[in-house]
Amino acid sequence: MTQPSVLFEVQDGYALITLNRPDKLNSLNPEMHERLREALATVKSRDDIRSVLLTGAGRAFCAGQDLSDRVMKPGGPAPDLGQTIGTQYNPLVRTLRTLEKPIVCAVNGVAAGAGANVALACDLVVAGRSASFLQAFARIGLMPDSGGTYFLPRLVGTARALGLALLADKLPAEEAARIGLIWKCVDDAQLMDEARAIAAAFGKGPTKAYEAIKEALYASPHNSLDAQLNFERDVQRELGRTEDYREGVTAFMEKRAPNFKGK
Ligand code: T3D
Image (cartoon, rainbow, N blue to C red; front, side, top):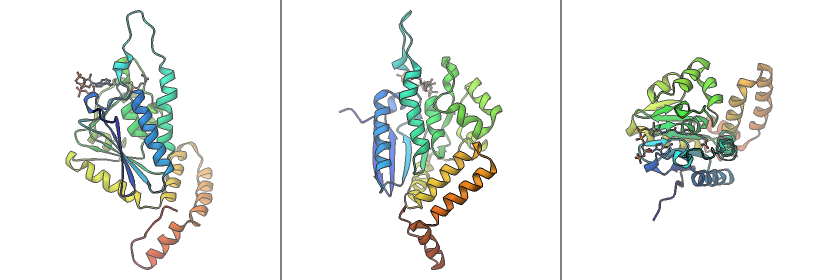
């Protein structure tokens, strides 16, 4: 029986989404995009799912587009990459980036091409020490897509973004963490325990506050100080009316751990 290309399970308040075509290094094809869309739609629609953990099965996180679907006959037509980017990759990146719930990405091995940028679209990236990030695009005559030209300069500055995109060399996880491309690099054996603990903590956390934090920090590079101050005032006003804020203050005063409901 063929294995599903994307595994989905819910535990401890979070959804574990596993890219599952290990023999193809979890490279993405239309069927996988479809399964990922379904998984993320389920996350969005269910109140009992309050965070996501995205990872890959086997030795890679994701090798980007499945290039066996892009083989061209000599003199034959070229594929319309704008079409697949517009209908598959861009919607995926937009969904990840705008999801109201935090997404942890556990990068278990190489993350190449769109696979690297899907990881960078997540909110908190933890990578195993043997993992690496590869803007592989220039190796096959393309430029970074799936948000690469947006995320890279914002995370590591234009000089490093250019180096990563133009040279298309593998960046080891440890170096990725050192230059601020990702949150953290941990020993391979610790990766899933560490990532699960974070996702589970988010799964019991103040979901509305997380949503506000994501929105504020992702908007920040485009906004003036005034705009951010106004956003903080307005959204903090809303957060101050949530059950979780009430519970947070009560728990603090009662010297106990808060029991957030995500409301
Ligand atoms: O097309 C559009 O719609 C536009 C959107 C584009 C988005 C993109 O992602 S473009 C970039 C596509 N990805 C790449 O260019 C990366 C290609 N892969 C690699 O460079 C290397 O495989 C890795 C650096 C990721 C890993 O290298 P290594 O040496 O650890 O493994 P390997 O031997 O190269 O690969 C292992 C197997 O996976 C191998 O198959 P085999 O020989 O065992 O049958 C290899 O062909 C296969 N594989 C790896 N990446 C892909 C792939 N098969 C199809 N598509 C892949 N992307």
